[in-house]
Length: 313
Image (cartoon, rainbow, N blue to C red; front, top):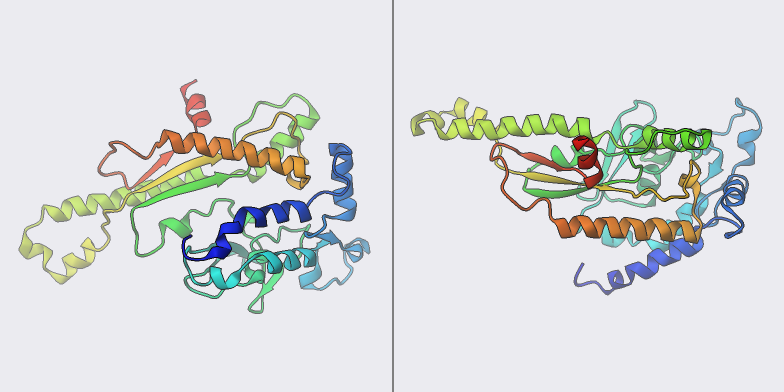
């Protein structure tokens, strides 16, 4: 982040977002804030689309078919985000979106294409609340409806390289068994939207272990065999890289419920910000990626302490 003074003021820009994108009438109680958000939207983020309530079959148009309009978000992002800086490719930015017609995940990558506000909005266009966003003549929804942790965009990237990867879980997969309807609604949303990274990581661990095994076998071949074209092709499937995947979980707050995903009040944002910052600091101080590991392991998952404690029970 050196060499560009515009990046020095990033925290102030984030504060602008918190100031502009907030619930209506903050401080009047969680339920009141929730209902005002549903009925009035959030300044700088989204506003209600009255025509969406004109009937299920009312012709809204493909890029307006949502209960809210995200035109305010487009204005906010255009004001705060320096896309010239993003498109320099350092650091690299990749966002995922679901292609509406084919149900396929599409990645927009600053290393491969020029990003603008539409790419970012497409990656967060969660239906049916928000309408699909048109990019290059095609409509896209939030990539989270296909995967909330699309690890393949990192693991399948070429050339592969040693990496330290932080995977942030905004929906905590761990939680107590619910005993009230409020707890059921809250836990249901966590389960529905939580990451499926555990099963994804298992596949990548198997694939990368095989790549390391190929390297080990190739090293045992005579030089004459390794120089043969067909053997070199087989050896190309090997890999020596190692990827450490560190899990960061959004801490659960004592008072939160199923409306937490629309809580954009300054207090709500600040509490989650502080809790996430504290959790991240604790993980960084622990440095779980430092130490001795199986030389054949190409992908190593460092689960949160909460996961390890649950597994030990």
